[in-house]
Image (cartoon, rainbow, N blue to C red; front, top):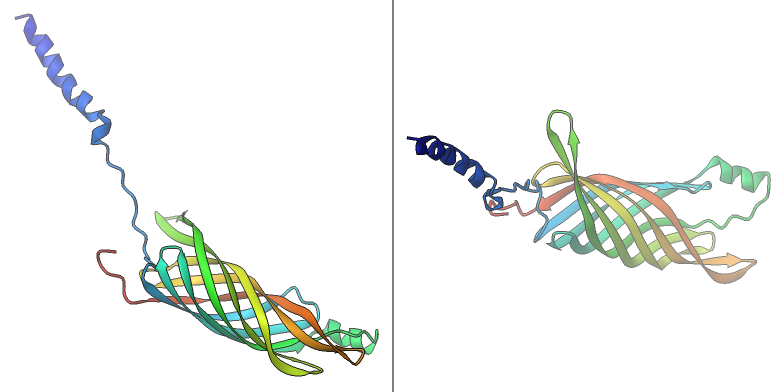
Amino acid sequence: MRLLPLCIAGCLLAPAVRAADPGDQINAVQKRPLREARRLEIWGYGSMGIADPYLQRWGGGLRATWHFREGLSAGFDVSGLGTWATQELVIAKRELHARVLESHERAAVAAVAAIAPIYGKVALPGDNLVHLETFFDAGLGGAFTETDSGRGLRPMLTGGLGQRVFLGESFALTARIGGNVYAERLAVNSQPTTHAMGFWSVQLGLSWFWPQAKEDR
């Protein structure tokens, strides 16, 4: 009769020991709302020039890139810009008689490649999660520019840093800050010369991914 309490205690402790077994643990990982691998991204954006006291730039563009896998893509970017003189440029020319070298980029096309090494999530009120991705890109192409001495197509380098906010399985809000640098042909003291010209800009737009994501993704 004395063995009965010991047997009952042993039977109650056995499930507790099994529950503590590391082999029975389950780790849950949340699925990404948007899978990029083997999909085409079409990004339409508006663009605004920044950090230039003399010229104000506004425009837009379209970028098409193929994602070979998550975080690696390549494609083409086409953009156009309108350029307007600021009040500082008018004052510098009229009152200070300054010689300001103006270069107006009208359009540009470039082959670009991008990597996205950073992926994360931000928790919002109401148990909502926002999925984010940070990417870096670089490209090589040409810029169609205009100066006081003429116009033409110039070799160009571009690069930038961007952020995607996933809105679902096929859409993302994409923002980018970057710069264009090109070899401009100018006339200084009536002598033709080549100068490296460029500017910084901010782009904001909506990305659409095609084809539709499969269930097994």
